[in-house]
Amino acid sequence: MRELNARAIDGHYVAAQIRLLRQLWKGAILVLEGETDAKVFGNFIDDTACQIEIAFGKANLCSALDLLEDKDLAEYSALLMPILTG
Image (cartoon, rainbow, N blue to C red; front, top):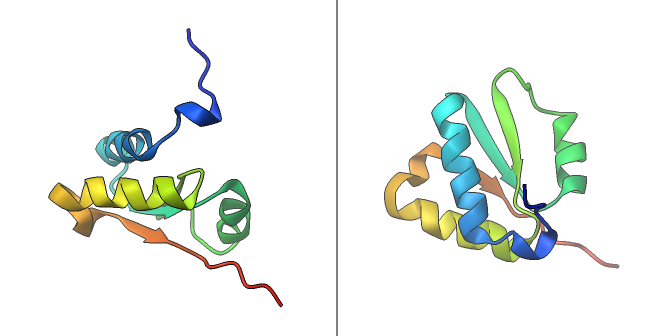
């Protein structure tokens, strides 16, 4: 079996993963940019009501949402967090 690497993940891959998850999961799906976001938000969501999907980058997240928007945007939510520097 081919091992998936970070370069193979794009918006199409993320959108496909979300569509597959939707077939098995009828609760909320929260799409986040990265693993750190998932760790932080994982502390605040009820995992019996909401599943987190990681997009591995803002570009992948935006692309996946664009792809999902064509048919089923109402089914999905995503969170983009700007990085604040001081």
